[in-house]
Amino acid sequence: MSHEVFTQLVDAHYAPLYRFALSLAKNQADAGDLVQQTFFIWATKGHSLRDEGKAKSWLFTTLYREFLRGRRRDARLTSVEDLPPGESDLPAEEVDRVRRMDGALVLEALQEVDEVFRAPLTLFYLEELSYIEIAESLDVPVGTVMSRLSRGKAQLRAALAKHEAAGPAKVISFPDFRQQKQP
Amino acid sequence: MNNNEAKFLLWAYRPGGRDADDPAFAGALAQARQDPALGAWFAREQAFDTVVAAQLGSIAPPPGLREAILTGASVSRAPHEARRWPVWLALAASVVFLLGASALWRMRSAREMDPLTAFAMADARTETPLYRGEATNNLHRALEDPATRLASLSIDYPTLRATGCHTLSLAGHDVLQICFQRGGTWFHLYMVQRADFPEIAARDEPHIMKHDGWSAMAWADPQHMYVVATSADPAALRALL
Image (cartoon, helix red, strand yellow):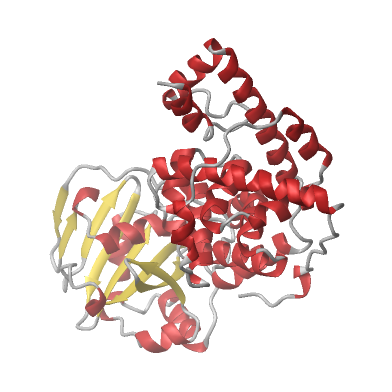
């Protein structure tokens, strides 16, 4: 892959990948590391992917696997699967309430969603992948993705309501990667 | 399909209509259009999802991340000096066998390529790395020397791998790559340890394959297998021997 093509790939995907990483890792430094590591793996291995059209899915899948590799699953991940389905009816005023919030507050709320739901939910809201591609990226059945989306949205709404009640979002400072060492 | 089943599907319907052509949603969407209660629920869900998606999308990556990615990748895998070849196309070609006077030359279809040769021919089209390390630079100089005969090439694989020869991965094993020019023609040499690829039948005699305008030559010594690929004619490969 030429430098130009690689740059195009980075430009097309690094921002949504970072948002996905940020929702998973919950801090900017780790999220940035995850994105860098993902493209590093692409640069050393991913270029051999035969179907270049699947590069986007490959990148999200690799980032998620790198995240999982970086920490052990805890038992809670399985127990939360047993929660009952979330509240299905969305109050009309909730949309306006969320519209008044800013991105940082929405992200904070998203980060409070249980990880097992957070990963598919973030991928859904990034709008980069279909539910089938999300299932492939997370290596779960399609039905599981749909189920986790419904539960994840319920948790997100609860977290958003809690954050709005708590007041304005705190300012999140982003790290400056210009001073970091390269892999 | 009842409304609860329709909701279950529609929770996965992305805002903005990206999934409008997905037949899996057709039934649920039709039901939402016909059932006012379900339609109102779906409209609220889509409005909520649209707002959340927009706010998530408003989060900007930190300054310098893009540059860090590009620089970090270039350390591992150096960019082309210039893009010279088209993307790899599907492997399919006719089978031609050539017999030479001093060696057996075979031009085989891509379908008959071993995984290493197919990998080499695909990768050769995509990139030319920079080199680092004394051993790699020495090998590079030797390869560009017209007096060097590739059939008698001897390499120190561990040293090359440890001192900066460009390393790729195939089936979980390292593939060393070095690119060189002779007479203005680019060649891309790939080297592996035979023990890493026991499923590939090593060819002690050079074999030449041609497909889709590209040529490759494969051979082996007791410890290593080699493939050299080029966009030039097979005659250019024979000249390397």
